[in-house]
Picture (cartoon, rainbow, N blue to C red):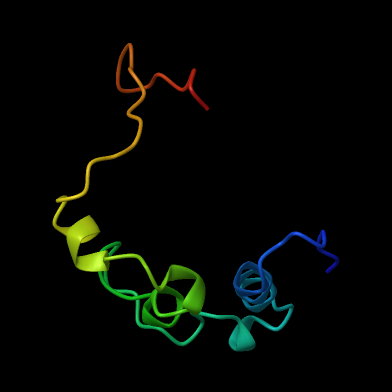
Length: 79
């Protein structure tokens, strides 16, 4: 994978490890995923995410920077 010169080293490492062609060697491959809220520890502890407070996210104490307005539950116009 080639990255632009300005690309942060931690981001490069994360992407390379997530896209490893060998499924059993990919970052997160050996994490136990019980629900959307549990698991992924090897990904969450990667240096790229060092400033993320996962507990605050999980408990919904962090406000989202932007919340799209939806016309209904099936509205995908923002995507």
